[in-house]
Amino acid sequence: MSRNKAIALYLSGTLGQIWMVCIIVFILRNLGMVVDYTTQVGMAAIGIGGVSSALWGAIIAIRYKKYGMKKILKDFFAVKQNFSSYFWVLIFLILDFGYVAVNGKLVLSAWYIPIILFLKAIIFGGIEEVGWRYVFQPVLQERHNYITSTIITFVAWEIWHFSYFYIEGTLPQVQAFEFSLGLLTNCFILSALFIKTNSLWICVMTHSLINVFTQLAMGGSQYVSYACRIIIIVTAVVLSIKEQNLSNTER
Image (cartoon, rainbow, N blue to C red; front, top):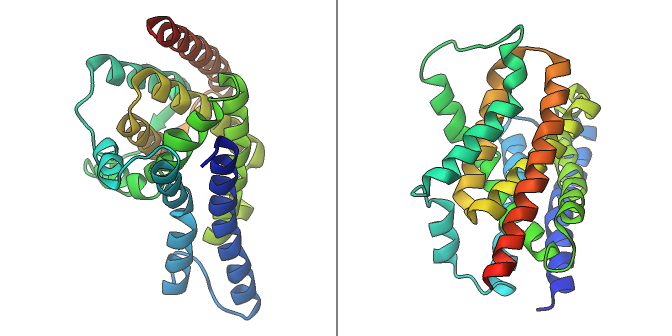
């Protein structure tokens, strides 16, 4: 399979699957059915649409990268990583949620809530990394530079997310600008972490933790948030380019 065909198949499969679910959901809602988290039909739609990026990521990993399913699963649960990998995760998370320290707080109703949210986030969030960071962006980077590849991934990922929100029934509540800015920042965080660590698990874990803290965070300084996002993007670009240059030198 050629590179272009791999990219086209991933995008057409991932977006085609979730758009097909969107069409079905649209029809069902216009027939008077409730399709959201409160119904079995809604949960089925959310599951089928939500798994699209991981499913097609696995397909491309097998067909283009010649990975076996065993390797994909092993990489997904490869918790044992270098200390430096977890250190960079911590740095990016502190920067990403540093705004909460200024007139904000983390709301916890019980000590075990973050654990439950984290496990849920792996299924409804972290699993997406099989597609976007593990396969799609690395294939793009075979031809394009890091920044271009990250932007392309962001655009496709954003389209996918808004489609997913429609299926969930939460699209009217989404603040488009704030969400898009956050998603762009997360694209740089996760892509930089994958380039630095070459670890699917690190991306799965970080994605899940971002989802958890987003749900727990309340208040905080918007100006600090904007400043931190700029720092994150600059740091991600410098880290990624430096790591790629190092890899090229070692070859």
